[in-house]
Image (cartoon, rainbow, N blue to C red; front, side, top):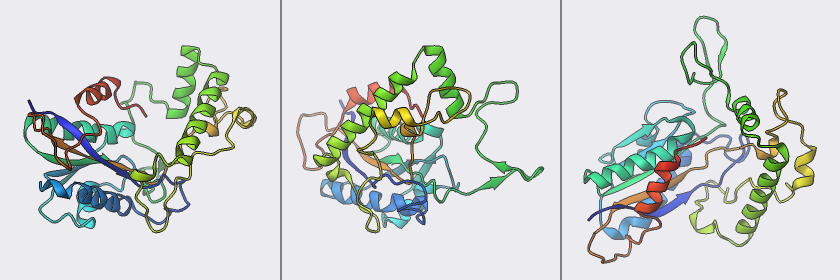
Length: 271
């Protein structure tokens, strides 16, 4: 039996919009990661069948193909870009896994890439008003922005601000501890001298979180300490068809296999 497995994972540091990666387009951020993953699996001796990248902020076109060319993977390696909004990167990995499972590919690079700093600004042609985001529903359906929607959901589910602050403080503390222990070092690909995540913040404890005003006037829930400040962080993985005979190879030692992929599918790609 053959099954898709994850055998390599790399990413850029996660930046804050307008800072270290302010002038880097999304393909310029994705390309070094693609190149690093391709180098990591080169000993397997398999060609890269496809590159699948999730991207929802633009600039449009086929970001995966442009990034693959920029990474030096060769004109023979195709690429396709997936837009499932906040679940785009996860869905790209799921699509790659499906291709491997079906036998249509043996080696696929998949992941997500965004650059909040260089995402284009667009405007509606009739009014000239800025186009802030794509509509998620047609007229007649509710279509709230993510923040107000999170407020409403927290109210409906009875999730208090104190509970959210406690979760956020624990998350920051765990991430800081992992960072200090070098847990992330092996997966990071430095880009133009940027080699460390802008987040998390060591000082983001319960006391500091409690001082933040709510990000949205309608409710007392999400605050800046729990928001995302992403600029071009991408995680790229290789999925290779398992041998099915129990033997192992240098570049075929899985980071994750079918059971984790199944759990990811059940959990979906939440933004």
